[in-house]
Amino acid sequence: MNQKLTDERERIIKVLNEHLYQTRILQFLPQYYPQLSDEAKQVLIPESSTLGKYLHELYEHEGVLESKIKEYLHTDIPEWSTKIKKTFMQICKVLSQNNFAVDQTNPTKQDEGLERFVYIMKEMVNIYSDKLHTTKEEEQVMNDQKNEKAAREKKSNADLKALQRELAGVRSSREKEVSAREETLKKLEEELVALKLSTNSQREEFNSVLKNREDLAESKFKKFEEMLKDQIKQCEMLLSELKLDHHKDENDMKLDRLTSEQQVYDFVTKYDNFMSEHTVKYNTLVQDYNRDQKRVVFLENAIAVMEEEKRKRNEERERKRKEKERVERFKVHTRYQRLWRRAYRLVFLTNYENINEKVQKAKEGKNSLNATQDPANQSTNAGKPSDSKKTTSGKPADSRSRTTPSTNRSGSQRR
Image 1 (spheres, rainbow, N blue to C red):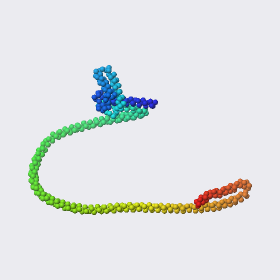
Image 2 (tube, rainbow, N blue to C red):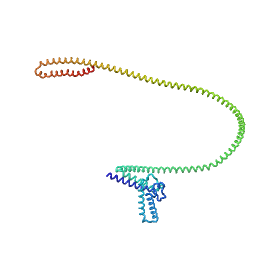
Image 3 (cartoon, rainbow, N blue to C red):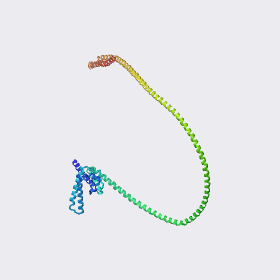
Image 4 (cartoon, rainbow, N blue to C red):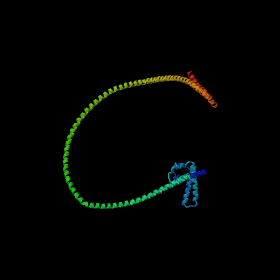
């Protein structure tokens, strides 16, 4: 069932994409052949090909249909529209077989209405594709999200209306304030006009006073100007005298400059000669220093090699000494272990024999005491000495069996 639904979904999407492809091809087919762009003429092949034949046939059908529409021959219009549709389908088939890339090509002369229709159809195909690939649960989630978004928009619209009402109230209050301020401004302008009229007389009086003062200042300025002209003449005479003096001083300074330049030149030549001699001496000293430096580096490298060899010899000597000490310590330890095992074995055997003798004596004394008791007790206690003997007799055997491996090991070590 799911496979069937998937196939049906893919078939619907394929049909929609084919219709979209055919509609987009219409953007590249103008009503008349002269209107074709250069790009379209390169793609649409000459008349000798199948595509060119179909194109010319399509343009002929369209021309006939247009003429019949102009003549109002409504009876033949469906037949010619069917022919146009059939020819157009053949063109679409040829273009699809030639892999005409609609997405990578732009028509030269675009039709806004057709372009808008293609855009709407493309959006419709995307919407249908999303709807077909959306499950019921996903659609429910999307609806919930849309409802939530609508609720938020409703709330925001309500808030916007409230703010607009508040803004209208504030605007009305502001308009009242503005009207009041405009009234005060008008009153102030009227007062300003009155002040201007009242100040005209004061201005005339002020102008007359200013004119009198200006005449007085002009007379004073003329007197001051004549005085300044006299001072300028005196200054010009003084300036001419100073120029003569300065020319004389300038000539003297030029002579001094020439003598100073000659002295500086002599000093510089002496300094150059001195520096050239000392430079030669310095270069010889540098060469001697570099030669000695190379010899020092060679000797340092030789000394470093000798020091490295000496260090390796000392390390080898130290390693041999430590190895010899380790061997000697190992020999001493083995001697101590051998002596310890021998002493331990001798002490253990002597102590064990003395303990066995004491145990035997104690058991014999106990048996003599038990012989004086009644027969019933003798019968009950008769098994005990035998058991004790078994145990006592078993211990030396066990001890001997345990001691034999140690003796064997010690003997093997001695060997």
